[in-house]
Image (cartoon, rainbow, N blue to C red; front, side, top):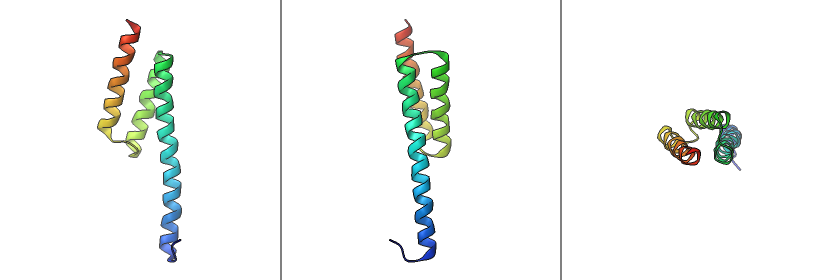
Length: 81
């Protein structure tokens, strides 16, 4: 446990950020799973939005979001054939 006031505040901030990042990470993972399970325009759009939000917030990198979206689209293209 930190003793200095600024370190205590930083610890509180870090906990809040970690919780928010975890929520964003779970959100995009769940939306990807839903899009694979029931491929529709709405679920795909939701997955893309969640990935973009996670990348914008810095939870995942921009190229990682692009790669995941690309692979998702590839899987969905195979299932619709």
